[in-house]
Length: 75
Image 1 (cartoon, rainbow, N blue to C red):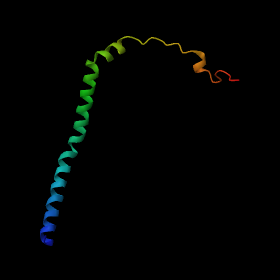
Image 2: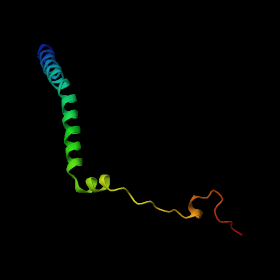
Image 3: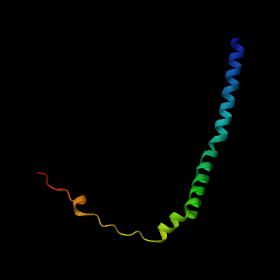
Image 4: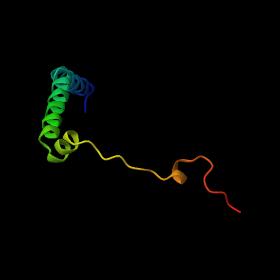
């Protein structure tokens, strides 16, 4: 490939990539915000999360041997 054609091709590719990057730079934040909105709507419509948020969780009693630092002595 002649050098002049190689340089021309490289310049065309570089210009195309710059144009694509400039187009996409504004869309990234919009896409992230749209994704967050979709996730919030899905969470609000999920029956499992609606039940868990409306009803308090039962308190769980953890045995002392699990929480104590010393634990059971071994002999």
